[in-house]
Image (cartoon, rainbow, N blue to C red; front, side, top):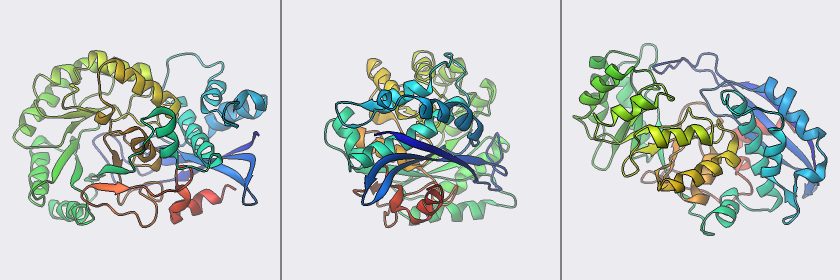
Length: 387
């Protein structure tokens, strides 16, 4: 059993939207296929992966460093001898050979992209949904395929007024979501409060709004927003300042009693641990958004989850960023608190398999081998072009 090829193509996911920090007019991602010599139904077993939005494609790193290390390795060094399968942990170690610690910016995304494809192929070889495999290996043994999801949107868009913003949010509610998210920090505080209040007008009982500043604020501005946001019952106040400014995050907790969220731009277990140690995050109300596709993949995410247990954090306080099916499988297999969702953006890479509907803010994952990409027709059409 061996990996015979790793293929990457850089795909556009451009959109005219912007958040408080960046626009998405030239956004790309890497789509990867890991091809094995294992056959099922006359076809080689192939695993697929891609990186989350907000970081660009990683083709050069994938092709020049990580692909070559795996293809040059002795095949038996990448196997799990107890399971007659590939070993994601050994494969991860191989990819990270001769890599110095620290510097988690772009290589963590490249490794995370390949890692996603590895877990997809491992579960396919065992002919199980990934969420079931994860429950058996690392969880309680019993998967929870019903997963909470929230609708991420509310971006700044040229010519978009508050009425159109209300229409967007109402469309998410109509599709079964109970929590929607709005971008802030790209306009004045007064304008953002107007946007918040207009969105709240379209929400009913049991429905909530989360807001996301995408790391835009200095401490003074973050506190000013915290005081204004305290007037509303929000689901969370997300990423107020630079993601590595743990002192800002810790001080902000003294000014905002509601739930806060951060972590999507922390790309290693060590960075996540520093957030828990020094960021003032409160395990009774705050949320952690680490995204395996951006942070060295599930192998590293498992280390992060183990670290959280050591600090008495429940895995249910984790709602990953990214809106992809990989995190949905992790949530279902390991009992995370839910997952982000992009109902209308970054398609076809976001969303769920065909026929999966949001009901009362939750979806139920179907029993598909691997991550389940083949169940999403528009996405699998893109992926199959690599094979």
